Amino acid sequence: MIKHHPSEEWLTKFVSGDLPASISSAIAIHAEMCPVCQAQIELLTEKAATALEISEAPLVASNQSNDEVTADFSLYGLDIDDMIADITSDISIEPATASANLTLEVKGNSYPLPRALNAIDMGSFSGLGKISRAKLQLNEGEIHTHLLHMEAGGKVPVHTHKGYELTLLLAGTFSDDMGEYSPGDFILLDGQHQHQPYSKDGCLCLTVVNDALHFTQGISKLLNPIGQYIY
Ligand SMILES: [Zn+2]
Image 1 (cartoon, protein in one colour):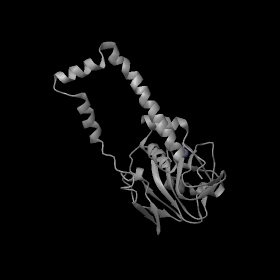
Image 2: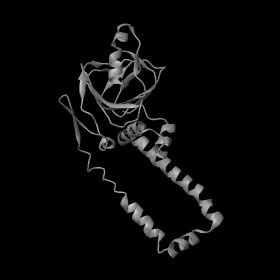
Image 3: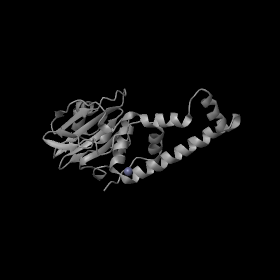
Image 4: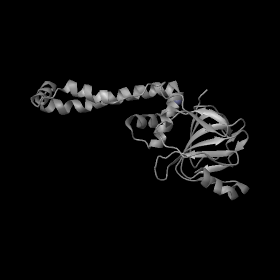
């Protein structure tokens, strides 16, 4: 059962397109898995659309009526209804099932690839011990996005975060000092959090990090190259 969701603030920014592509992808994937957030996004989208109508309406009303605007266009042989029909028919939306069966192979495991990632270029998986990762080519400067795979028994040394670390669990389970996570969980951590993710049975995550992980405990400090690696 999903226990961790994006904040309402992020869902609102997701709807208005005000988030980096990496975070938007994570929210889109979470929504594929979470009916609650899916419904919330639909609601916020409706609200945003209504707000747009309200804010645009006075612009027209102050000068001329809608009919007059339409009449002006028709002088040039343009029909607004036709134009809108043209514009909307250009947006080709793939049916949800058409591309849902792409799979991802990692170390002998096969995972369904989330639809939101279908169009994103991805590097190949490379590994360090039980951890392997593939970079998503989103070209967002200091924001790095990866698919991170942990084999059964895989562990990331205790670390905190200089920036933020977003983990979206796609498949399998992992746990840390704060509890156990299930597929769909959307976990946002920052410099105040310290944790040591461990996966008993293996898992696949999407991670978005905006600065290197910072390892905090004893010998873990010697492992900082792993932090750089995971970042
Ligand atoms: Zn949710």
